[in-house]
Length: 263
Image (cartoon, helix red, strand yellow):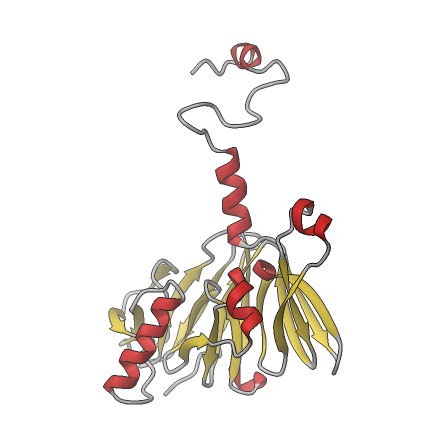
């Protein structure tokens, strides 16, 4: 099986990745990530992630676990049936960065947020990382159900806003908002911790818990998780048919008349 090695990431804030597929080479992607492709690439819907490991029961169990992450039972496979290289592109779903992960260089496994996966070589196993700790299970929120990407070759994940790469030394720890964790290598120890303090809990506005990540290993953090972006858009959207917050001038409704917004 061919492995993706030839790719280019375009853009700054709204990125897309262009992959050169060799003859018979395939990639799998979540629904909604496809952008464009050249003629000669065949697209088909497959059950699960398209990995060859295990029998029918293993595939059913794997697909069932995908439902827990909020993903579909099905994925889309793109295969180059042309005798020469063909190009296919996948786009970020919202402003941010695309992170290429060479699974061979991270020990064959990478753990990421459940909505971060964009596309990967066919054969990469896409499952969920179950927590063995009670704290994560009860209080993890966004950061509790993590996806795991296993196998060899390339995988591409998406981070919202600006992305930070943090290399942790053995025993070194950072605390991160659970929604801001993009992913980390399998050597990182991950848990969820109470913020602490009644005033912080009630009035802090930052949530009750944060993720603790302890080295050794590499952690990727995003500045704009999609849930935060969606929350701000919802808060500013018109409620009950009214105008959105902050619209117009300091004069309120009169200001809307003056600036031409008469709807």
